[in-house]
Amino acid sequence: MVGLFASRVMLASALMCFQQGDFTLRSSAFGKTYVSAVSEAKLLDSPAWADDKPNPPVSARSAMNLARIVLDAAIELPEDCEWHQGSLHLMVPPLSDQQRWIWLVYYYGSKKTGVTPGTGSHKIALIVLMDGTVVKPKLESPADDDKKSQD
Image: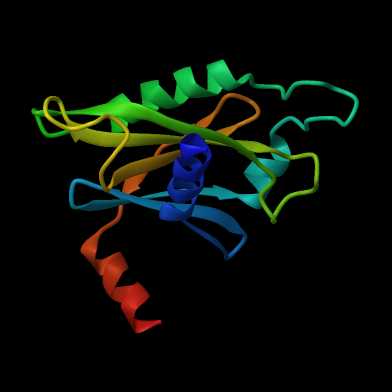
């Protein structure tokens, strides 16, 4: 039951937006905000998960491994911190047809010692498409924050 609760909290912690033909995911860790965006065209170019197939084109294990590679390359951690695998969710973005799925892979960042893994407010979500592409999270600039507050 605790795992289910943690999963829901983690999913809610990433802000999902659907604007200008993109599926956008924002998450925050270590005082920085990261944005991952994928266009509807890119989603529609990815393989469908057909109703007659028991498993998606990219397995859960592959999605986790691919996301971890991008996470380690894209986001610099403080020296005394580390990432812990959070949850993994399948999702149909509202921009796509009902056979275009994505994986959302979540990680918690925490101190290497003295903190229970999987707790804290440092959470990153990565989007994995069904062709194995991981959408690289980009650091949101302060100018982007100003635009959001004016809207």
